[in-house]
Image (cartoon, rainbow, N blue to C red; front, side):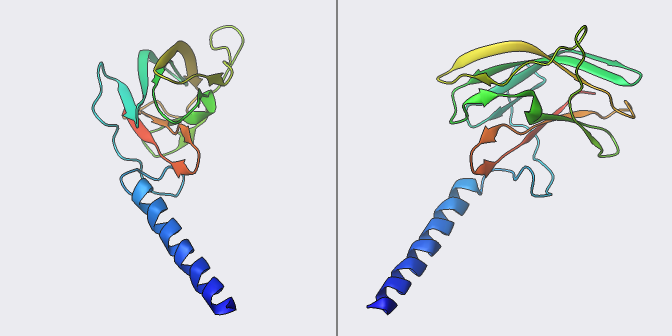
Length: 156
């Protein structure tokens, strides 16, 4: 009887891994060290769409030592929120910069809960990169639970 239980658990584990891999296979792994895939087509550009969750970038301003923009969302996915920590600015040399905030020109916005096709934004998003040379990309890694997904949006 213990052998049957072990066999059952082993089969269950194989099925679980196969199901997980089939769910994640078409997605790009976000933090596993691989390069994110270009964002799927959406409109108007610049934007990205991941599994029914869309982000649009507008008002991109690049100055020496600063990149500022606004982001707006529509969420009809299994993700439940928008969060500024889901973004990094990727410099031409590959360096990733986290958002930077100040109270006057780029206030921090809180994690925002929404779903069912709701829209939110625009929210300010600012970075202080070491180098603003083109190309600059905005990497977006929304939270889909166990699935790590990301998209890169070319800014310049």
